[in-house]
Image (cartoon, rainbow, N blue to C red; front, side, top):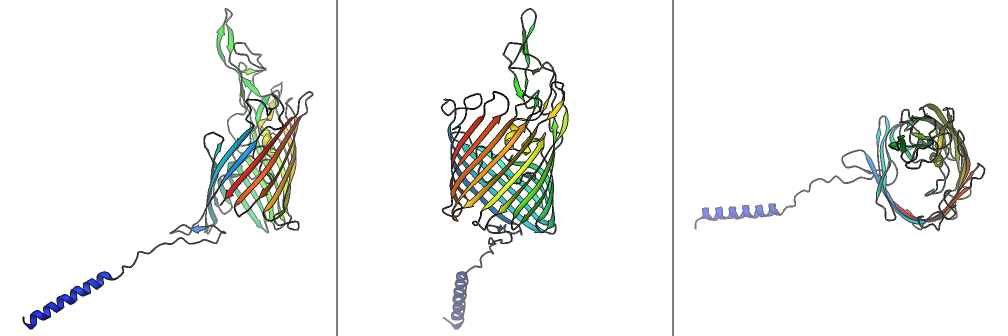
Length: 440
């Protein structure tokens, strides 16, 4: 073996050893875009990776046990607890989800918000509800959210019986809010006009229509179907126009609000409108034909909420009053089951009127235990001889928050309707609810 062979062998061995060492060196990892906390809008927000948009995901679960009709009068004014066909107890499970995205822009805050929930009552099927879905840019809001007329809707749950305020849930709208500084603002809103519709009656009673389904006898006597109750409104033509003036400061908040509502009647032919109960196969008593007409309904209101930290942290007292002609749902959401207007015997459209006042108080006995009480009195005067009545709503509850995000409580909800017509019986309803809710 010569020296040249020895040198070549050593070089090969060195190269092999170097290659092996290089193979053992760690490989640099790919860069990871970690999720960053966004503290610009409060807790719970994080940056969507690769963007400057902050997102918060939330939700909750609510379970309730309900006892219905504990004071209801016998039919026809109500259903008694001991009637076999009456559903006197029930259970509800509801799951919530919400997504809140926010980005600061040169035009102001750009925000999108979506909230939905799925509800199952007893053995019923699941129902998905889109609660809110809106886009906000600065003072402009478009989509589905709370009406700009609504201010105070009660301190209690109103889970079964409405608390007697203008709480119709959320509505589709386009709105703009002007900020004046120091907590003062003004808003204007164009909102779906059929969200708070009550009915349009004929001579003070729901409009019932029937259809001729054939003839009998040699005289070709018409045969009529059973009457079907109609709402009386025509199609949606003009949205509601809502405006408010509001102040939000350390002491609490207050609002003055107003709304315009298009009362637009449908047309019914003379042959279809019945004046009484229709018996199948018998020609009904036929009333006058109804020619659709329109009038302007309106509502005004005002309310205030006062923070009471001098009593206990979290305590508050609220009060609100409202009056309406032809837009009774803006006074009391329960009134949408009755009439905004009625045609009188001469065929003229007359507007119903309503007013109401209510207040509520929440007190924290300890940081974990609180109770709320809400009371409301309202009155509906239905046009053209419709049944007038006074309504009282009272709700009270007590709740316990053993840990953050968990709530356990019980509530009683009471409603009384006192009809002013001679011989008309009042209607009482009492509901009890047990609730367990986890929110995150």
